[in-house]
Amino acid sequence: MIRLPALLCPRGLIDKDTMRFLPNKTTAVLALSLACAGMAHATALEQFKTFVSGTKAARGEFTQRQVKKADAGKVAAPSSGTFVFARPGKFIWTYVKPYEQLLQADGEQLYIYDKDLNQVTTRKLGDALGSSPAAILFGSNDLEKNFTLSEAGTRDGLEWLNAAPKGKDSQFEQISIGLRNGTPEAMELRDAFGQTSVLAFKKFEKNPPLTATQFKFVIPKGADVVNN
Image (cartoon, rainbow, N blue to C red):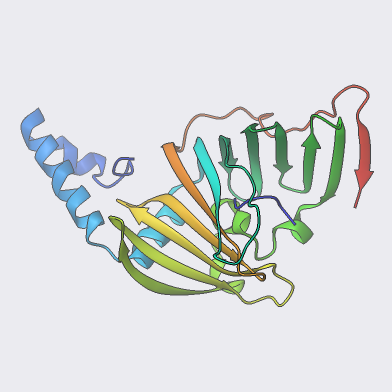
């Protein structure tokens, strides 16, 4: 299983032909504001489909915390880090705090690197992605093949979408995505044991320039390699 719980209007809302006829910067700002307003009133499903189809790559930062149940014991410490992805199936998910761990996929293989242990675990990406939270953010456009999607209303200023995995082998009962202006700002992950993890995204940059070798994993010198 992948260890994942894991903002402005997106570019492209106003095309070049429209901008050509805008008489001045004030009008351009007004038009962009109206476009943002339209996105804000779109349903979560509409926003998410626009995000998936229009965002071929992205990068940003995340925080992750576990919500403690009333009858639960100690929960995992909050964590934070960075991410970058390119569809389909290429990503680098880096935990920086409280300890360093790297999850990296090149479209075919998934590599999990534990710096403290100096150990790399590898497995085929198709087996690892499936109906995991990673498939929602980094996978292909065919999400409804692996998830049942439904609207979940408005909460905390976000439009929420529920994604229930169809596969019986998923370790998550439900994944919820909170969106604002067509950008995911939060995810809530409820596992089979009733534990909920919450992810928050910030500095979300869509379609940044990426290099051809960005996702090529290089095994650290002296690291143990475990193939699953």
